[in-house]
Length: 450
Ligand SMILES: NC(=O)C1=CN([C@@H]2O[C@H](COP(=O)(O)OP(=O)(O)OC[C@H]3O[C@@H](n4cnc5c(N)ncnc54)[C@H](OP(=O)(O)O)[C@@H]3O)[C@@H](O)[C@H]2O)[C@@H](O)CC1
Ligand SMILES: Nc1ncnc2c1ncn2[C@@H]1O[C@H](COP(=O)(O)OP(=O)(O)O)[C@@H](O)[C@H]1O
Ligand SMILES: [K+]
Image 1 (cartoon, rainbow, N blue to C red):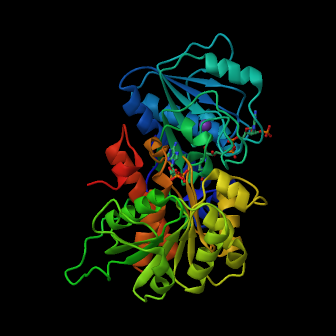
Image 2: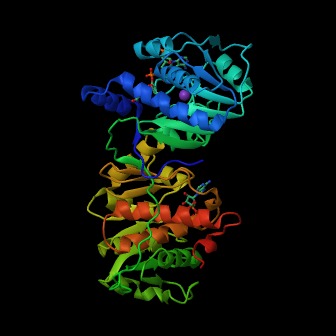
């Protein structure tokens, strides 16, 4: 599973607007369909490597893309068959169908499979789940490789409904821009490798996939404080805060202070008595405070969060520290990154509605903070509407303590100054890249190892 880095993600309705704008500026919709069909044909040609290809066409423009691909594949000499659910209903699809000179088979129990299938049944126009009979028939079709046109048919492109596709894709050719289904569970796990076919639609989307991880080298004049100094406040479980501090150093901070812990996993971390915490908050060199890892709810946490907020330092708030800070965050004027996992998110933002991207955006708007809504399909949202979707992460991160490591990495990126959304995005990219590099057997400590 993979998606292209830093790629635009549009809703179905935004996609239609972009399509219309493209048409208004002189590129006809049939030209867009020709480009879409050509991109699909190209991938099918390479994946089939001479094996027969079966193209399944629906009644709308997704089916139209399929007819174009079929024609182009046949022109290249491929062994290609077409099967359709129903005759085309749109003008574009009718025109594409008319140019396909071969037979069109029905999609019924007599349909013979092929090693490679192109799923051009439904794209962003799907309005309801597939009929059970059709879904069953598609599931029964013995195909080795499936190429989905735009999205695997049956999924809700906007990721709001959990409709499962009967033909999970090995490769999905996203047309013009990615859709939310490509980056949000459960649909994303059925998209396989997502390739973006830039068919000429111009879209300057604020919702994008994660960019490649940063590789910032220290400048020749860098020093430990210019690279970022972070303060991590430990609670009753100091191991979690120690992980965050170590992660901060590994993620590029120049200086990490661990407040309220006797020992630290790296000698480079300054572990100091918790009594110094108020004074440390006054240290002007501290570029970010991380609080929450290993610190359960209670009066002590409330007090420590309140003093961190009063210090006006940029904050990374994890776990119960998010709840402790919520009333002040809602008041506005703070710079913070919040890092809730699913349970913490639901507890803090019970009123957020819609898909995961909409909920993350609502939480960011409510708190004026950057929200990293964690999980296998992590979504990072800023109050100004920017979103980075971090699909796919590394499933090896599903182990205790990795969230503490992410909080520490956020602290490192934030402590250098600059935009908190960029800091959160860089931290998430660093976290996933580090996990992918380690792979099997990963424990959180490995993320902060050499
Ligand atoms: N974006 C771009 O720039 C470009 C986009 N292009 C392509 O266009 C695609 C979107 O095409 P689209 O709008 O025609 O919708 P599409 O997905 O074919 O489905 C609509 C049809 O399905 C039907 N239908 C719906 N649900 C159903 C169900 N459960 N079971 C059965 N039927 C159902 C619905 O009929 P209904 O019954 O709802 O009236 C209608 O007939 C897009 O994904 C991309 O591939 C490219 O060609 C060019 C550039
Ligand atoms: N299946 C998964 N695939 C990818 N990333 C995951 C998966 N499960 C968890 N993660 C990531 O691992 C981290 C776990 O954080 P969290 O639940 O707060 O753990 P902890 O509190 O133990 O540190 C998050 O960054 C989350 O996005
Ligand atoms: K499709």
